[in-house]
Length: 176
Image (tube, rainbow, N blue to C red; front, top):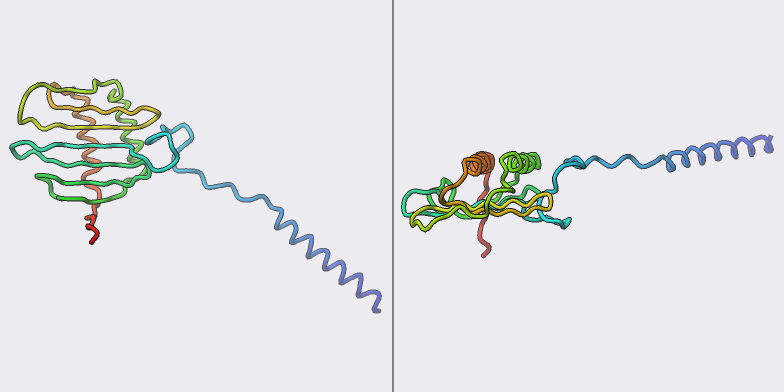
């Protein structure tokens, strides 16, 4: 009887061992797909780290012009600085969804932003400036707009503001 138990125990152990092996040898699950499809435009600079994707600034004037600056990074992290005639004044931060970034770059392409002149200006005082810089797909375009600004530029800035200004901005507290 002793001889019959030993092969049975050995068979059970081998079966358990082979079962464990088959569990361990299963292929690893597929990695979760990134949020951006492979054919999506490159946002920000060429490095893999977080880099500037968009910079929008409106400068003050002698009247009631709104003045602020927004820096938006490829991760969606955004910094806002309200400088004049804005609901939120001072430094704030927020996070934009990656879909918003792709919407901005697609709208910029659609409206011909990357082919616009670098400067729309004249020797006129008391006119606020708008600076817009977008870095995407190996392009780094910065436009200064004051006088003779194309309607497509105005439309792009208005759409970017409509998307970014209402975000839930949280005050950035100064470190002691």
